[in-house]
Length: 95
Ligand SMILES: [Zn+2]
Image 1 (tube, rainbow, N blue to C red):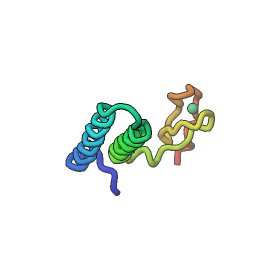
Image 2 (cartoon, rainbow, N blue to C red):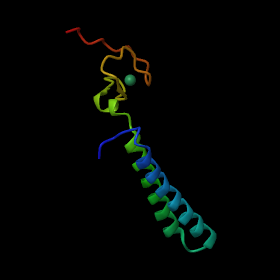
Image 3 (cartoon, rainbow, N blue to C red):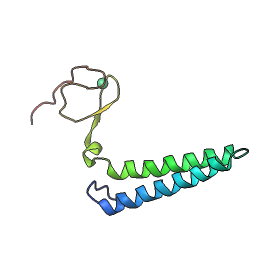
């Protein structure tokens, strides 16, 4: 699946799924006792649906990021400062 932050219909489709799952979860919670496993499964399913949205709208530039050598946070290749651990990063040699 191609990630495209501007593909609004696809994003809306994923969000509709999240809404459906939350409604189903609400019904389970109203039904009450003895359904902890079903409620847990519904929560996991809802979180999975949200993850689908997240992965779809992820900025394609994230793929080119590199790990900070100090903390592992992914930073842009030409970053001179890690905004997670605040270590100075070496600027790559100009080519
Ligand atoms: Zn870092």
